[in-house]
Image 1: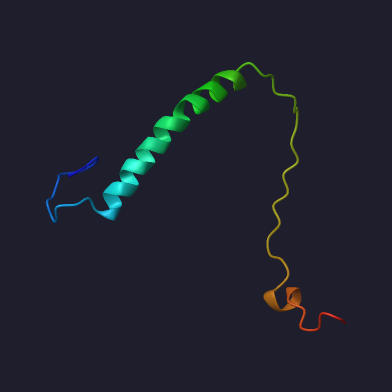
Image 2: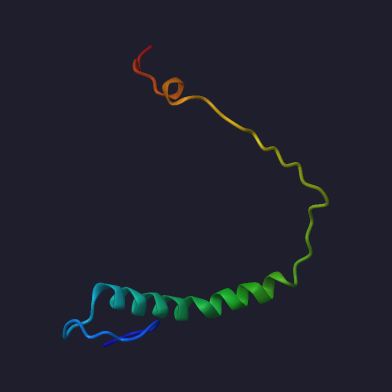
Length: 74
């Protein structure tokens, strides 16, 4: 039985769906980790170009009824 986190519990002879997904996720993390580390090392060499930022926080928006057009040819 495959257990990555927690205590192992024997419920059946085959691996559960959760264990298969955990093993697949760990494999994908292992495959993508070198690329992530290389990208992090390369990003430290770049200088930031932006000197200021304009951030607009807009509350609200059009309602659902106003964005749905009942007459496509109108």
